[in-house]
Image (cartoon, rainbow, N blue to C red):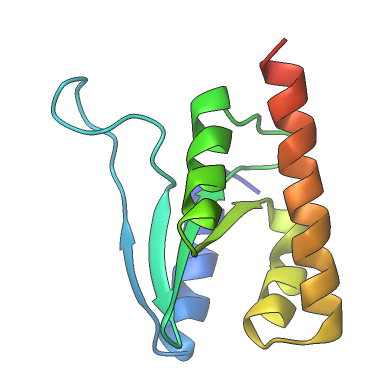
Length: 118
């Protein structure tokens, strides 16, 4: 699934749960901040920064660093691939499976950080 199609699928889901969200557009350098997650979302008083990737997509080091900064500030930073969408919904619904997936998601981000930082 391409990132644009995935974004549309995520937006449809967010609409069904009455979430607030905005798609962040990284415009010309100097006008916007680089590395900001694709989607900035508020669900049930929780802030999510969601970096979307199509199948096989690679995050940049700056994207991973920003997801980490969001978590350090008390938000939820997620690197989201299409194959993880159902797990993401479980996480939003606060199931044990969803919490386990989020822990694994943070480990995946750390793995990307280690690869990209070398």
